[in-house]
Image 1 (cartoon, one colour):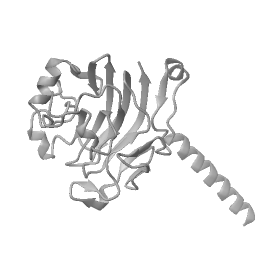
Image 2 (cartoon, one colour):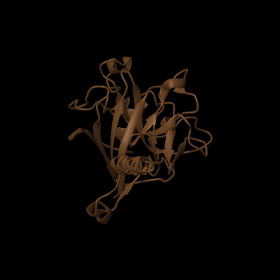
Image 3 (cartoon, rainbow, N blue to C red):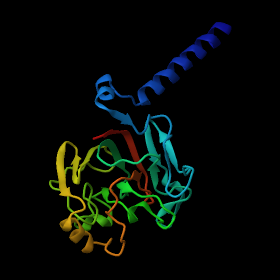
Image 4 (cartoon, rainbow, N blue to C red):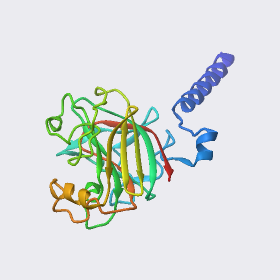
Length: 241
């Protein structure tokens, strides 16, 4: 009996080690040499906090190597003790990579150049967003520039390469000296120039027209949106350009 207990304990230890190894996210030697940094290690959400607060909302959890927003306690259009989350660090020129998947009929977003200040309630009042959406079920999909991969309310993604709800999508976002590019599942879907007259004109025709700081920040945080639905993010890494 004692031998069986010891064997069981060893097997459990090996299993836990195996699971943690599978879910841990690391950088290759080449990635480290090239300047990539992890924004999420697959085990803890260190380096992130809820927008406008010092802590991280408890609705944001680590789930099988992904940051998961648990929508089981929805209140209005967001989650109780959830809220949008942002990185501790700010970035100007960068190359961001990550993966996301969304629940059926779900909505979320990846927000760039977030400025954190008490006069703003939400990060999207300051920074542009790549839309994360279930195009097949969420009503926002009926609005051009509100579909998955879009530069939200500003530019439509072309072509549309998003996968179905529950499936992982690969994202790359590059911002260098005012040139912004979105890649979704291996294809470039957005290319635009930030902060010039055409950019200002786009904002003036959007829902952000009465937000004077929106789209003007040139160094800011990366944000993940709580829009009241289950969403998962993983393999989040960034390279400063």
